[in-house]
Image (cartoon, rainbow, N blue to C red; front, side, top):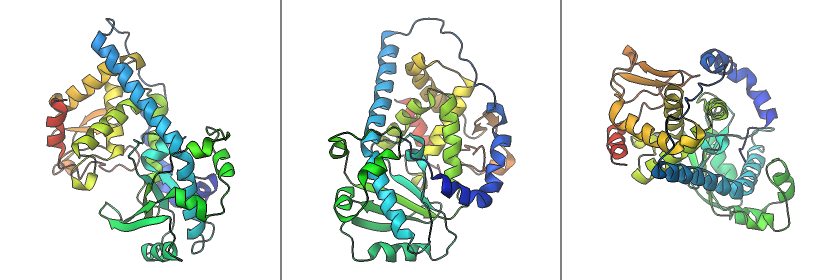
Length: 336
């Protein structure tokens, strides 16, 4: 199940996020109508294309199954962290964003959470409140390099179950997609949960998640193709933005741009994957062309020093400005 931000938290954030939220309808005008209709296939798929399509859909289903098994442990982690942070910031709600919040997470994906407070001392306060009584469920915490300050927490949800008073059944029932049956809680994946915690309301994470969900609702192939490319980048070790790789959001926007330019049907998943790899590996020129959700556009003068331009449809910035390793990604995709 997709983890959405609590409505109360979004209501509280509304005045602060208004400059961003009022831009969404304006920036996504090309998608106020139906997405482009794929042309009818001119030939039946080859056996190889059909097998690839089946593999892609199976992989996407497998990712959904894993996310379902991890949904309750993740909800427990969010509930316990939220409870602790309310000791300092009463009433605060943690806002999930990133791939877990949009349903495009791999089994190895971290849980991105935003603490919606404007407090210059938030990292010190978080570390202090999490260290209280040295909880056994907190495996580690560290600061990591990123575009904005992030604390990475590794949490053992199995130990969390033993140490907290939260009713797991009530947490499960918060999601309409989760059925609470005998043995269902024990069958969940209670392995370690990695949380990337950030703070503030200015980095746009929840807004990006809303944009992603908008595109995923329109383009059926967007999720499976994004998942496959993300897994490929992880295997290349090119999935970390501040190490020259591509963020999950950039990958999703690149697939989005491709699909609105070259529409494919759901049955053509194999052909679409081969085409998107071929296009970005051999035909796309990052020196002259920018990726946008309304199609490929000429780069602007302000982008002259960028290695790759993937335009955020709401915030307007370049989501791939640190992708200095994109040339190597292209070479790897060419050999895929």
